[in-house]
Image (cartoon, rainbow, N blue to C red; front, side, top):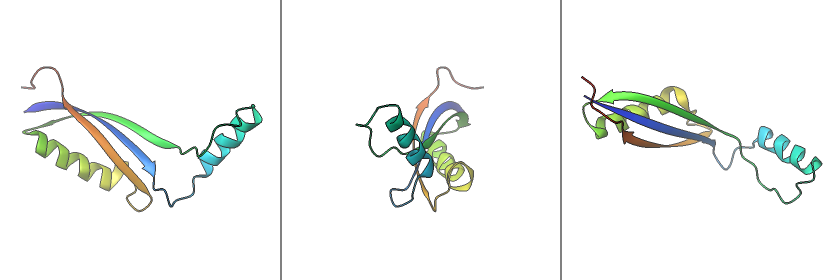
Length: 89
C-alpha cells in the first residue's frame, strides 16, 4: 500500500449565488478596497489515505467528494494527489 496526500478544493458552481462572497466583497469595499471584484468563498481540505495504486486513490477521492466533502448539485471540486514520502506497511 502506498500513502497518498490529497489537497481538495471545493467551490460553488458559477451559476450559484455566493452570499458569503458578496458579504466579504462588501466588507472589503467598506475598507477602501474598491478594486476587488467577484469574490467566491470555498473550502480547502487536506487528507492522507492509503491505496494500492494512484488510480484507486483517485477513485476513492472522487467518491469521498461526491458523497460527503462536496455537494455535487451546487459545488465543483478538484484535487491534487501525490505519493507521500515513504511507503506504508
